[in-house]
Length: 277
Image 1 (tube, rainbow, N blue to C red):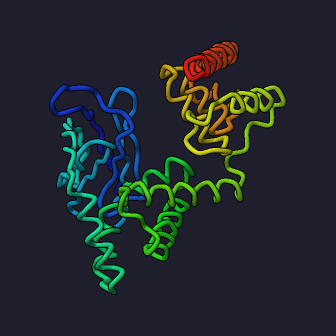
Image 2 (cartoon, helix red, strand yellow; image 1 turned 45 degrees about the horizontal axis):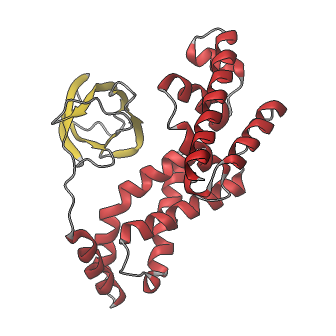
């Protein structure tokens, strides 16, 4: 049985429409979608297990996780309000207590740490590799590496930062080996993106020497219409024809807007360089 769960997600206090929220059912988190720039989402659910009820899960950086029991017998249209997460100074010390317990052989402590960060790590990785199965494998690998190196953790820094660094480094290795970050074969585009990433200063790079992550840091600062085209062309590596089919825009408009996007990207980079020198 297939059904649609759709809706609108907004900030509970300000009413701001929230993009990039991750939405999935607790029974199958591999089937997930993200809310768009207008805060809207549509999750298509195939209820293979014939569950009468499930739990809708929604996460977004800086907001408390959202959970809602939903019945799987009809189409659902929801308006969801997320509350911002309060800063908790005790988190790091609490993590460290679990780390010390784990190092002393308490297997439950490993479970506590994994339960706390698994979803956040998974969705971060999924965004980078754009493949759910690979994200699952890389998430497990990240925790395995972290737990094997737990004795090297420095409590002067947040455990989450240390864990994220391990996860992202694992993604970079994976992307390099699988060549998922290869820029378009179009010679003009390839030369442009190569020049673009070489112009970035170290402070603007998410991680050094990784073209895909370097590009993302700048693309995020474009307006939605330009950002969408640049992501499809240079990150998803779609051809012009594929972009035309996805956007329903004339090919001339696609090429013109991509040309304009290149100019804007160049201006952003040059402005950063000026202000950093």
